[in-house]
Image (cartoon, rainbow, N blue to C red; front, side):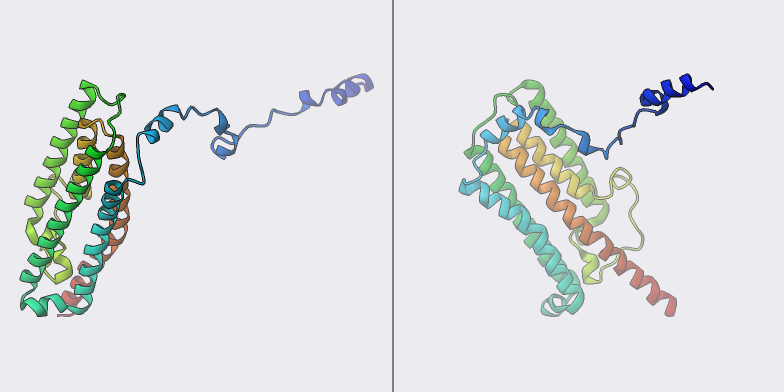
Length: 238
């Protein structure tokens, strides 16, 4: 290579180097968030009054319910106090299940009151969205009812924590579709109700329900597995 060629290469560094590739997602630092269109989200939030008492009551009910039954069930598993009070783990489980049903009825009522108290959103007030809500409610009801029939009362209402264990894991419908059909079926019901009512506050409350259930699953799943592992170990030693 001659001196003139070397000089040309030195004077054109772009020809000697490949263009630097952007990290795909690292991504997210390359995204210009200022150019995102948040008009729809802003419009949604304008229809929600977070200071409304009915909204606050609904949020408290949503968060309190799974917190309550997880705390009580773990306390029972550790102390067997409820079983001793009622003289039977089955009666104790029925008692807790009855309380959970009442709490869930109140949660549903408080969410319905909050949806009715706040404005509808014309963007959602459409026939196709209404019928999408109907479909979601039907799907959610199927998941909830079929889950209850597959597990029974004690299986549904934390009977494992009372020492009422199932012989084997349920893997048939609807558990072959989703791991927690009772929770996600309930969430689908609330989302369907929000769509049918063209309720923006209903969408927000449903999102809170989903987050609350997701957190509950993170605590319940491993603990339930631990209960069944303890039973397996006891059987091995017998």
